[in-house]
Structure formats: C-alpha cells, structure tokens
Image (tube, rainbow, N blue to C red):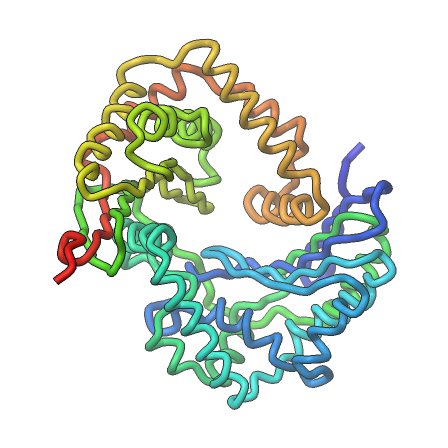
Length: 416
C-alpha cells in the first residue's frame, strides 16, 4: 500500500498528499518547476522577484489582507525560489485548508504587479542583495558557482543583479509567468490532517481551468567538465573565507548516494574528518565543512573554511591532505557503517515535520517522477560501499579540477 496518494488533473497539474492522523495541522505547497536556471542574462533574478511581488497585492486582496489571511488563525504563508524550483506554501490548522488554497491560488494566478509596488519591492530586494553580498560565507559559494557554470544559467545568482532588478517592469513579470508558469509544471503537495479527495477538489476548483500555453521553454544541460582556477576578492572583513569546489554528478546519477557518503565523511558534521583535523586538532578554524549543492543534472561539491590570514595556506594544505587520504586509503568498515547510520538518521529526523514531508513529496516527484519511501531511500543507502566511495574520491579529488575562491581582508587586514 502506498504511503501517499497521487492524482493528475487533465491540464497536467500533479497532486500529492500524505495523511498524518497524529496532527491537527497541514503543510501545503504549490510548486512550479521553474527557477533561476530557466532565466537568461538579462532577466536573471526574475523568478525570485516574482515570488516577492505576488505578496504585494492581487485583484482580490491587498498586501495587508494577504499577510493576515492565515496569520490571523495562527498559520503562515511564505515562498522561496531555488535554482530549479519556485514554491509558495502555507501552514495552518486543518480547518484552514480551503482558505490556504484560496490565498495561494490568488497569489499565483491573480497578482496585480502594480508598477508602484514593483518599484518599492525593488528596493527591498536590492537591500536583500546587499545584505547577501555582505555575508562572505554565502556570497563565496555564489561566486564559486558562477566560476564553475557560467555562462550556463546554473551560474546565475538566484537573487539576480542590481541592474536587472532596477529594470523589471510589470510586463516583464507577466510575460515570464505566462511563458513559464504552465500547469504541466505545477505540483500541489500537502501533508498533515488532509484528505486527498478534498485536496484534489480544491486544486481543480482553483487551478483546473488553467491551460497549457505555447512555450519554447526548454532547460539546457550544463557541461560537467572542470578546470583549475583561483579567484581572490577583497572586502572589509577580518578573516579569510575560502571555498574550493568542482562540478560533479547530479540527482539523476546513480552515483549520488556514494557521493552523499563521501561528503558526509569529509565534512558533514562535527565527527567529519575536516572538522576533527582542522578545527579540533589544529584549531585553525571555527567553521569548516564540505557541501553538496545538487541539481537535476549536476552538483557542486565544495569545501568551505573561514580562518585567519596566517593560517590560510596551511589550512588549504590540510584540506588537500584529507582529500588525498580518501583517494589513497579505503575507509574502514566501522566508518562505512557509521556514515550509513548518519545519513539514515539525518533523513529520518529531517522528515519528522509536515513541512519537510511536503517538500519531500514535491521534490521527489520533480526529480524522479515518483515519491520514494523512506525504506527505499534506506535501501539505497545500504548500497554504499567502501570501493564506491574511494573510486569517487579518486575520480573527483584532482587538484586540476578544483576552482578556489578566497575573500580576504583589504590591505591584508592592516589599517592605514
């Protein structure tokens, strides 16, 4: 018996629900399979900007009425944009399911995008952009992606650029929605105290009349070739931020599970090799980790560290020492078992809330055209092998395939 229910409307909208009898609330997401990788250089940032602007008013509601629609009942509305998806979501007590559908559909299909509100929101997002650029740990990973993927759109920042934001008009936003927000690219995901038939009924009521238009929309694949490059930036900061990274296999690759294990072993927590060596043994950094930013057909494998100028070169040497160890020496059976249990525990704990389950339903459907059960995911984790991890390390950890980005203090940290 399936742990979730799925229905596809005539216009292509997919509806996925999972009933939870132990809660009196729900999480509802309306997902559009469109993100910043579906933009071009001139309109980069438009997905994220649309996500902001829909909350400024619709033909039926003011911004204040939108804000109060669920908050008045203890619930909330929000949205987020990634490089591949846009999601508008709500969480509230189960009695508010119809209200949530009414409001979310209003945002997606009936936003007014008044130019006056657009101009005000431009300033809000530009302030968000400046705040982001003032946060080196976040900014450096965007610089890394830009160097790895450009000119492919996966190298674009989700938030866009100041110049693009300043140029957006109502026409730009409406044209983009008309072209990209096709019903065939929409998924409705709901988890909690919900009934599948009711969610289908509400989806059909609010979105069933949407038609798939003519669209030239196609998603280009990035090249997975890598090269060595070093980029150094300066800012008014006190420490050095370093990010090493390369492109690797995406969600659609059979190697993704061993890749996740390799990332966990190297820098996935306080028991990871990077943490125990660079922070615990040498005390060179408060913050050091590896990361895996996965997309459908590619991923960024990276390592981040924040350290002092005097420890910069030694820290990079220590990072490469750990990478070489994984290339040259197979991990032990104990470490293999530990990493499997770590991954399973992380997945299990991450799926305990209705919101995280709602996200799992939608993203699994978006990437695999079906929802994987936790037992199926665990079975995949059990296929991780010592040989698979070492083979990946030998394939990936080549110094000539990594881009290194550093953000350093201006004037080497010296005050004039």
